[in-house]
Length: 308
Length: 308
Image (tube, rainbow over all chains, first blue to last red; front, top):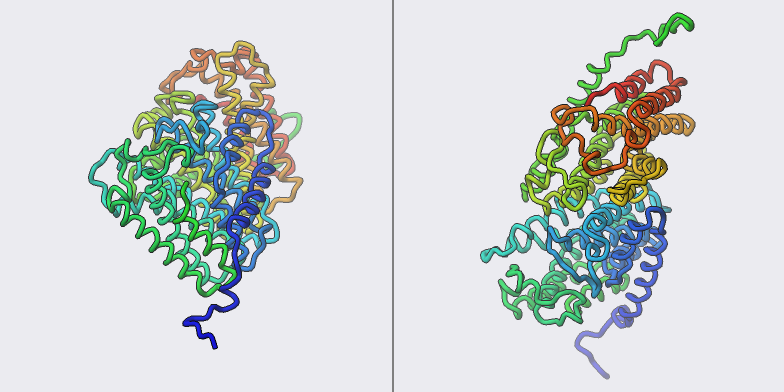
């Protein structure tokens, strides 16, 4: 008789093919984003919005939203407008962050930044247009979801992008630039707001659309907060260890800008350890969901293993 | 108004004190805006948002929203979050339009523009923060209105500010600058999108919140489109005839910038005639509402008679 220490349940044996899952979802989201913004007069602004929105990227945010909605018993159809809106909001924040008055970046995802192609004026307006459209899109296009839930989603999205979210994080980031004595609290504030807030909104909105009970919403929110911070730590690590080609954006930029990062405070090794720990804590929040949580679990693991 | 031929009904004789009405509403809105955005960490962004949001102004947009909601049988309480959101959106568009990459204005409402006080980076983010907060505020704070109506309002707000509204109008405005041969169609497009679209949203949202029937919504929308264009024609006229002190912003700026305006195409007199005609057409749309429409009627008349 063969005795194993800790026999796996059949549930745990189900192989989960993350690359195939991500690719399928990515195609679905690309197609939805492409349909979401058709070109009209004045063409230039629609082209500028589409240029950055359809510039590739992992589509991690919309994928998280769809995956959580399904985990909580909803359908991808219920969540696709919100998933698209999340990518519009994320894209808007990238366009505005790249502006000369902000981080002054020339490249993003291996392409010229929006203002390098369309000019600063159009880039500002393309961001504004994407942000406004994100809310319109959720309000007008969400189907088969009670209106009260859609309002909750809009409220969450607004909070995630405004002064209590992305915008607030970017303000503290700008204030901290070039400062040698940025504390770990300040760094955490920046990334909890610049990165984790929107990732949290992705997961929370997916759960809300599906009508998840409050306890599940809380668990999933903690999952998202943990992967959000892990994601940023890994980003900081990659800025040091990856090449420009791998990143598709200027590498070593944080060092050049004397920007406080997790590796600059903790060192590389400790940063890696912290990221792994956060991912483990994130996955622990998924325990009660069983097999349904496989996509979210695999996405959490993917975050620390990614190389770009 | 000539009273001899067509004696007024008692309804029409009710004296309407517009200045008192505007002042009462203005105070109500100022107080609501002040409460809407308390200062938190990072203080700078909240201060920047408040600096422009609380910089005075006629508060015409929120007043139109409240007045239409009441006209259609709703209460001001139902409409106050949307009214505040409309002013946040309007303020955001002013902050971004004033940026060096856009119209490069140093003064607005007699005060330094946002970026002259807080810097370009914070001004861009203050606009983003106000825009995001506008949607959050409507979604989270609207009370005693069916959720489906609130979603309709959010959808309208998004359309009014995005590429199909304010943003699209500003793009064509920027493209037309310095061009000698701007057609009246292009000029109408600019102002239908830069000015009329948001005024239309104010009125439409007020009506939707109150649950106005479709026919009334159509009438009120046409009222708003007419006063929107009249408003812009008068703005163009005032840029020529008013002093800087009266305007609170740089006077004669359109001429200096060789900007196409209604007076530059039609001349001053014809522009004044067109504005009056639009206001008459607007007021005609209010006929079926009787006495309840007195505030909207007086506001329409006020638009052509204002001197700043």
